[in-house]
Image (cartoon, rainbow, N blue to C red):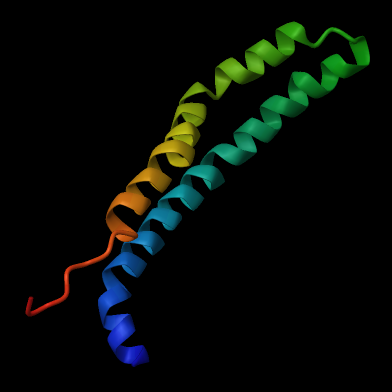
Length: 93
């Protein structure tokens, strides 16, 4: 029974693993740059109590990453629910 379930699930498992690998690579590539940008702008402004400009610069610097993460959080669950979670017709009927 487990083998039968795996045979039906292997394509979804492979696609999920590939998608998680892409997300992990994007986050690994952009994470150090965003941490450095935060340390040099937002963390320093806290000492001067003037963070409006620094926060604006920080959020403007990672615009594509915000769009990508918004896409992941809004569209991907929708697609998973539509295609992966939908019942399949029984074979032979």
